[in-house]
Length: 140
Ligand code: ATP
Image 1: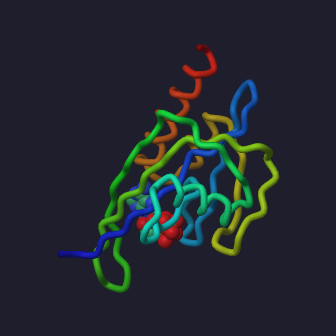
Image 2: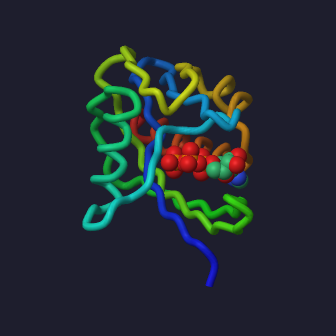
C-alpha cells in the first residue's frame, strides 16, 4: 500500500452582490483554497475550520449542504502519495486576512478571476460547483 493523506478545507467567500473568493498561494507555486491535514480524532469539518483559522486568521461559518471531495497523486521524498481533499463552503465575516508562514500570499477574487487563477482543473470544478450552489441559495 502506498502513502495516503487526507486534508480538509473550504471555498471561503465574502458575501457581496458578486461574492469574493479567497485563494492562497502555496509555497510550491500553486493557488488553492485554504486546507490542511485532518488530525487524529478530528472530523473533516473541525479540520477545515481549524486550518482556515490557522492559515488566515478567519473564523468562518460553514454553509450546510456543500461538500466536494477531490483526489490526486503527487510524489514526496521519492514516494507516491494518494491525497484526497474535502472542501466545504464557508462564509468569512470580513476580508481581513492574517496569513501564516505556510503561504506566500492570498487574493480575494470574483468568480471569473478566481477560476483563471486556480492552478488545477479539479479545484476549478470545486469552485464552479460552490459558485452555483451559493448563487442558487442567494436567489432562493
Ligand atoms: P495541505 O494544505 O493539505 O497541508 P500541502 O501544502 O502540503 O497541503 P498540496 O497543496 O496538497 O500540499 O500540494 C502537494 C503537491 O500536490 C504539490 O506538488 C502540488 O502541486 C500538488 N497538488 C496540489 N493540489 C493538486 C490538485 N488539485 N491536483 C493535482 N496536484 C495537486
